[in-house]
Each structure stands twice: as C-alpha cells, then as structure tokens.
Image (cartoon, rainbow, N blue to C red; front, top):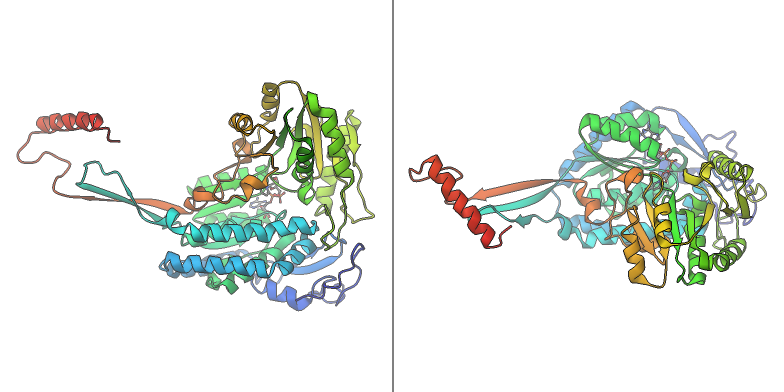
Length: 540
Ligand code: NAD
C-alpha cells in the first residue's frame, strides 16, 4: 500500500514520496496513489480540496476533495436507487456480506491501524480497538439478523380469530454524521445494522479523518455490498449537515452535545427520527473493597485511552477515603510509567491529541484549574518534543465547582480525583451535572456494585472495567441518558432504530361490529362480558 512502512519511529516525519507544496495530491506519509484510490470513493465534484495534516508531525497528509450541495443530492439519488434493490435481498445474503467484512477487517488490520494512526495520532493499541469493534459488530449483527428482523407474531385481540404480525420495514436512506476520535469505527459501526435492515447510507465523516472512513467504505465494497449503497460526502458539518438532514429518512449522529441539539431540532422540523450519541463527563467510583491494583490499571485505561479523546473515558474519579492514599499512589505510579510517543509503533501507551484545538482546550482546562488552586499530581504539561499537540496524562486533585474542568467535558487526558466518605455521597456526586453516558465501579462485591449501578444515571455502567465490558458486548445497548444522547447503538435497539414496525392484522369469522341482527347495546354487553372473561383467563 503506502510508503509508510519504514516509518521513522520516535521522530517527526519530515520526508515522503512527494512534496505537498508542489503536488496537490502528495503527502509526507502516504503514497498519492493510495490516497487517490481512497478519495475516489467520494461523491465530490466541487473542484475544491481541503488539506489535512497528520497530528504525528503536523505535516500535510492528503488533500480531500469537497462535496457540494449537488453532490449531496446525487449521493442520495444513488443511495435511493441502490436501496430499492437491496431491500429485496434476503437476510442470508446480507449476513454473508457482513461476515466477509468481519474477515476482511481482521486480515487488513495493519493497513487500517496505520491509517488511523496517521490521521489521528493515537497509540497503535488504541487504534486496534477500531477494527476489533467493527469485527465484533459485523459478526454480532450477521449472527442475530433473524432475531431482530424476522416478522413476529403478536397477541391478536380475539384468540385464534385475530392474527397479528409485525414486519420490520427499512426506513430508506440513513444519514450518518460521525466524529474524528474513532474515525474508522465511528464512521462504520452504526451503518452496519442499517445495511443489514435493508437501508442505504449517506455518510459524512469528520473532515480531519476522511481517509479512515473512506478505507471503511472500500472494505464494504470488497466484502460485497453494492457500491452505491454506501455513499460518502466530504465537507464542513455546518454546511453539509442541513442538506443531509433534508434528504435523510433517519439521522444517526455521534459528536458533541452542542451539535446534537442543532441536529435534533432539524430532524424534529422534518419529523424524522434520530439517534444522538453525545458527550460525557464520566465518573469512576473506587469503593473501599476494590482490588486497588486492578482499579489503578483500569483507571489508566479509563482516563488515558486515545489520550482521553473517547466519549466513554473517565474525567472524574471518586475514591473511598479508606483506600484513597493507597490507590492514588498506585494510579500515579502507573501513569508515570506510561510510554508516550507519536509514532506508528506498538510500544506506546498513549499517543497525541489530534489537533491544536484539542490541545488548546486541554491546556485551558488544566491552567484554569491550577490557577484556582487545583494540584497536579502528575502531568500537566504539553510535550512539543513528542509531537505538536502532545499533552501528558494528567491527574488533578482539589478541583472545585468554580473550575472549568469540574463539570465540562475536557475530552483530553485529564482526570480529577475526589475523596468520598460514604457511598450515597459518591453516587450523588457521580450523578451531578447534565451528562449521563458511561460510569465505572471498582469493587470486589459484584452484587453490591450492580445495585449501585442502578442508581447511577448513565446509559452504561462497567464493573471492574473501564468501558470495554459494555462497549464490546455488542448485544448490550450503548448510549447516553440526559444530555449525553437519545437512542442507542448496538443490540436490538441499535438495529430497530433503522426500521419502521408495521403491524398486519388478519381477521377471521367475526367482525368488530354487531352481528346477526344484534343491537349496539347488546353488542356492548357481549363485549363487556368477554373483556371480563379474558381478564379472568389471564390474557394480556
Ligand atoms: P462535533 O459535534 O463538533 O462534530 C461531530 C460531527 O458533526 C463531525 O462530522 C462534524 O463535521 C459534524 N458537524 C459539526 N457541526 C455540524 C452541524 N452544524 N450540522 C451537522 N453536522 C455537524 O464533535 P467533535 O468535537 O468532532 O467530537 C467530539 C465529541 O463527540 C465529544 O463531545 C465526544 O464525547 C462525542 N462523542 C460521543 C460518542 C458517543 O458514542 N456518545 C462517541 C464519540 C464521540
């Protein structure tokens, strides 16, 4: 594929096959032919391109052709034609394609991970989570297709004489707007159940990470999905969002709460459904009976996976007074032992933030907290020696409500520690604020932790794990309560959102009006007797 195999490990990338200053398709890291083969998958004829850079070095990576309003229109026209034929295929056929995608993603994982690292700058081990999640999602939906989509018998009003069944009808064309933080899986994972249910997709991935999303589209083609079934358009969300929502039959959005609100309002205007996977300020609770080594290991992953740029990562940690000092010592030691680096190698425990914007936010949150009296237990510094947007994993103590990072999502490698004395207080503080995405509880008493989980206002709660126990269990719905979202991905909820349920009732022998010369009054009496009888018989 690309020329990046001899990647300079540990150092900035300064050379490449072409000079981007003079060749608009050239990049320091990727072969222009490779980039062109990916961008060929776009519907983008405006003639405009936007250069994206790699956060590994800050150097240019590729020029991405941009889509116009006409391109969005054309993408929907193609998708609609493809969907009409696709909806007539069998579930077996669709499931087979998903299972081929599963194999393909695992076989091509090196290529996928390389591209994710080039575009996002994350550590290789965090990039691996993306093909892993797509393989899990593809296999899960392929293997459970009939369970979710088969026509189901329901209870008819008159036993034996009213037959009712419910069909799952595809919505049509689903618009998917996705963020940059997990650029491969966020662009693809929500689309797989949409396709399985018989829909087409028009995808608008984030502008910073188009290539990973386009590689996903190529892999869908190679697995055997009809090419026109999955359209990709490129451009700023605020420009393309409206034209996409105007033409979609359903919107699946993942991104910030602020953008989610705008999208929900536009969907409401058109009376189309939407699912919104939004931000969080996720709490982790370390109870006094927690295994402290396990909790410290989990806390590192919970806080610093993908440099904290993960919707389900933790930014607030509540630790029982009785174990606070012992836990913090272990957590700080493990954090300080992390290997940091902006390279494609496996050895890094954390990579860089993706952009100057992200770095600015993290610096602003930490500097504000420190200026107002918070203590930095470790980290707290940018690391330009490692990469232009690098920031150290940071643990804060003494964070108070007047500090920006107390309740606002940082979306970076910064966690605030708080002591608690009793569990009711910890639960109340974990539930503070308007978000409700993910929580984690460390305790050796599983039953007690599960009881506490029911009191936490979050869509997912992981016990003795950061986020993987729920996120990787594709049968379990994933999404946010309160301002962290609406609707769910994964599980039956994650596929039923892309279908309309259609009830078909067939009536035999009797009708729902007086028969055999019966008066309306007698009919009402007969029906009343029947209702009472049905209740006695225990019928729903
Ligand atoms: P963002 O809302 O700025 O952008 C997300 C996507 O929306 C991008 O594709 C962007 O181009 C598009 N967009 C921006 N403005 C738009 C508009 N007006 N109309 C239509 N589309 C528009 O979010 P971000 O900062 O890129 O992503 C980080 C956020 O995403 C964080 O808050 C994070 O918690 C959240 N997130 C949530 C989940 C989840 O599953 N709940 C997963 C990943 C990220």
